[in-house]
Image (cartoon, rainbow, N blue to C red; front, side, top):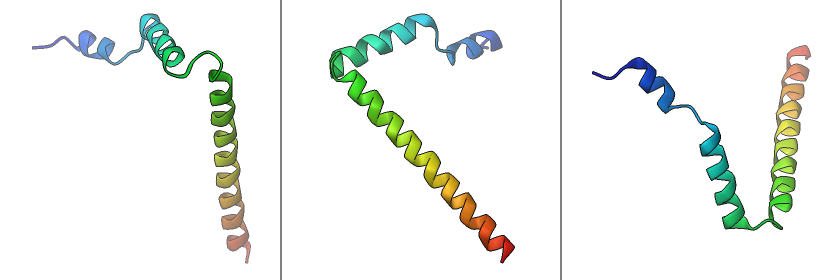
Length: 65
């Protein structure tokens, strides 16, 4: 029988895992490509939020009609 504390801890990400992920990202993409990658992610998030807000606005217009 497994202890519930062990199960709970197994799903958490600690500082060691975060450092490992950062090191892997640097190795895969290189230090020079990371700012470009983050810029692309930021643009994607911005476009996604804009699209979801546009969809919400259209639904509200439909309700008023």
